[in-house]
Length: 428
Ligand code: IFM
Image (cartoon, rainbow, N blue to C red):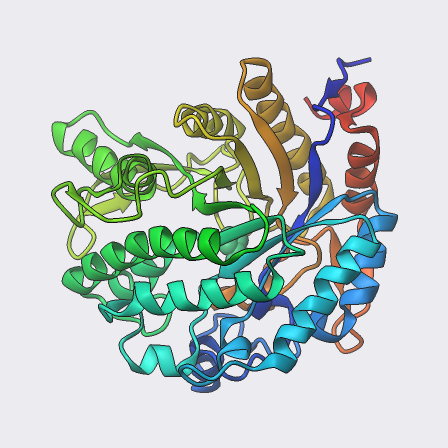
């Protein structure tokens, strides 16, 4: 029998989703518009009805409770709330009020993300993240939502994975508007960091109670893929962009390299009550060609990988959690999971990553949640529906929620507040 891995009392167990990936029919954001052009999403799908979570959230909350969860991270679709600039849709606010009430009824603590990759079309038409007004517009939206739902939401997450949008949309040409322009990339990178401060301040001033507010950083464990000085520098640059720029920026209230020279930003210093950490894999990098100047080294031939091609590297999870904890705020795991068609691989992945989270806990990391990505297979952005990250499958056509063995395994962990000894023995 293996050693049981027990988590602290009050630990949050659940899943994470985002509006565009699960709700369905988010017709008024820039992703929907881009999908309609055709030819962008690798498997030829579009988000369409997605998982119809917008209409089936009650069933989902019931399932989450039934499967032992006590928390749920979802995102509020900005393009529903503010369909035109400055026009607020109260019916949509009411929808999210119903979602939050339903979560409460099912004993699920709500973690509400305000921005998860998607922009309302009007915002995108004003230049999206390149618009100098972007942080103020995000701040206004955050203030509005905190006023509307602040009585019922104890955890607000400002921006999901702040490094992804600038890089994928303005440097790598992978997310709309698909530009490859280093200057635009740096501008967006500045604006997103400034927005983190603005949104934090806005929620703090507008929410009636004192919620916990934080960003969701997609931390990646970065290693050099060669011995040359250039490779080491490439790894340092990548680490600076993916991790340090955001973490140091929030701690010190400054815009550091690569988007600034350390200039202070009002309201940014300490604009976090906790840090949300998303972790999937490590990145091994070496010096590369423009526009990125960094090249990712593919995983070794014998490495275990996901269907996304990402290497399974649990030790990197521990490294990232330890590093995040060094900033002196509580750490919430806001995403961790694997795209795979093999559910046994998912179960192994979860247990091996929880073991690393537990290792961090034992070393004193103030860790408070494990929110698995994701509840049900959903629209995986430019990859489409072919990537399967869910504990539940999505039956094409009916959208029926079908629990996978990993859903039952996760339920056992969540109910026990521990990885039981037999599970540890089997997978570790
Ligand atoms: O699906 C995404 C999610 O939207 C953000 N974090 C990574 C997940 C898997 O790629």
